[in-house]
Image (cartoon, rainbow, N blue to C red; front, side, top):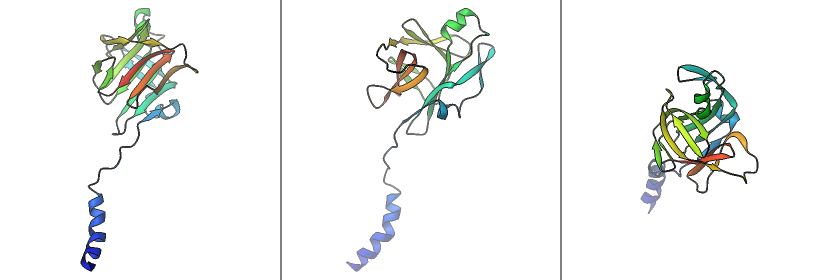
Length: 168
């Protein structure tokens, strides 16, 4: 019995190295946190657009990866581009948007009517998804990410127009 008592304290610290720790919670990043990781300007469709860092948000996933969204100043772009390019989305992981998978990357985003439009940095459509207009949102902001209806779901909203994001 004494041998066992001497053995357990010496083995216990090493054994703890192999016990998986509980995954830390995913975190929504508000503008103050998200803006620390975003650039002052982004490249899109042959031009550089200033980001509106005060209108940014993100998700820090429990595995250390991030997703960021930020509104951009599109005043130098044509009306056709301005219509569907309202923000920039940067994601380190694939995300599911309305049942469609968007690979990791940098994208232009915008809400056009009842559609959420994702374009590559050349301005070409990559994905379109259903958007929902939330009349009951208590405090709509120009851009925000809020918790969705399940722990792994988030809503990316521009004003009251929202789309659900989740990791596949």
